[in-house]
Amino acid sequence: MKKYFQFDELGTNYRREIIGGITTFLAMAYILVVNPLMLSLDGVEGIPDDMRMDYGAVFVATALAAAVGSLFMGIIARYPIALAPGMGLNAFFAFSVVLGMGIPWQVGLTGVLCSGLIFIVLSVSGLREIIINAIPMQLKHAVGAGIGLFITFIGLKNAGIIVANESTLVTIGEITKNPNSLLAIFGLVITVIFMTKGIKGGVFYGILITAIVGMAFKIVPLPEKIVSGIPDVSPTFGAAFEPIMNNFSSLMTIDFLVVVLTFLFVDFFDTAGTLVAVANQAGLIKDDKLPRAGRALLADSLATVTGAIFGTSTTTSYVESTSGVAAGARSGFAAVVTGILFLLSLFFFPLLSVITSAVTAPALIIVGVLMASALRLIEWDRFEIAVPAFLVVIAMPLTSSIATGIAIGFIFYPITMVVSGRAKEIHPIMYGLFVIFIMYFIFL
Image 1 (spheres, one colour):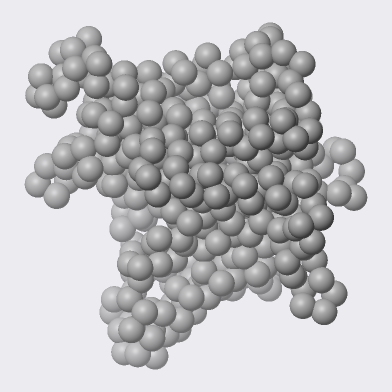
Image 2 (cartoon, helix red, strand yellow):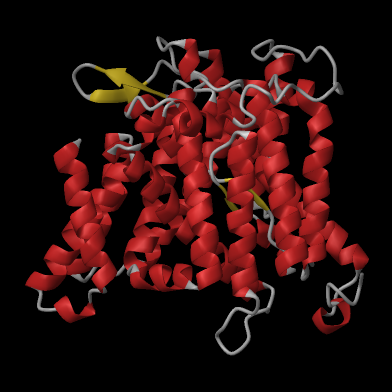
């Protein structure tokens, strides 16, 4: 075991790897609560039940996808990186694909499955790295930051802190009269304190304490029990294959193509950025290259396919893995530990199922803050870069659509670059995306 995971070469041991794996799990365990709430469209009123995914089934799918993905990454690529359904991608799935476009969630899962299969082909062939390198780094940062603002907006909305207004579109809610808003604000303060103090798993602890306080003040219902059998996953398991077998025409649309491309695009940069960030922090990058990068990308691709089959949005590498590295993790054994903990979490469904939107809103807001930090990396003093980057960032929360934000920014990027005399710096792939997104607006 030590030899396979290269403990001696990496200067690590079982104790450091186990602690690192546990720390990573605590830092990202919030996804077990947030993802089912997101995909079940919790807090969204006035929609038919068939638009909502089953909460319990999504919980199981989330835990299994995270477990399998982390085990793939740990064993195949031997990196201390854990995987789970990605924040931002689940928001796109729930609010843009299902709620915005009106696409059935079963078709959305088929889109995730297709993107995962394409991931595998691109990863094995090496094309995935070529495509990633073709997208300007400035736009990569803008996409991450825009998703962060969108996620924060959803958190504020779910907590009732931001509400609709006929005159101004949105405004602050009556937070002093809304117990859920007050609970969310309390949770945000607690989580901010934890994160500021550098406490590992601060987001998870914030959710835990907020839930306890909510139960103490009877804002959140008490759990009937702590441990139980695993919820039924059958409502979502294999649902990705239903449109292929029963309604193939639903996949032959521009909407479906846009969905697949968006899943591809966002997961591209989530994975690439996380791999570089974690590997650099762990000192694993050699000669400016990432060892076993192909294996890591393949593990991520396999995790996406597995998650789609179980019944959840795209599974991707988590930047929260850096917390495990900070605690000492250096090898894939830490990811294996995290994967095992996700499997064990399946038995604690009753405890997790009582956590409401108000309890998880602080996590969404904090994750948004972390993702928005990419804004500092954008060259705002270069107008030809600032315009498309800004449009990507601002359009996502204002249109409630990640796809629309990406489309607008990627249309303007070739325009500003060509006009500024920098056409030679544009990769041909960017011109292809320009045409695709123009068609996206024309046909929709």
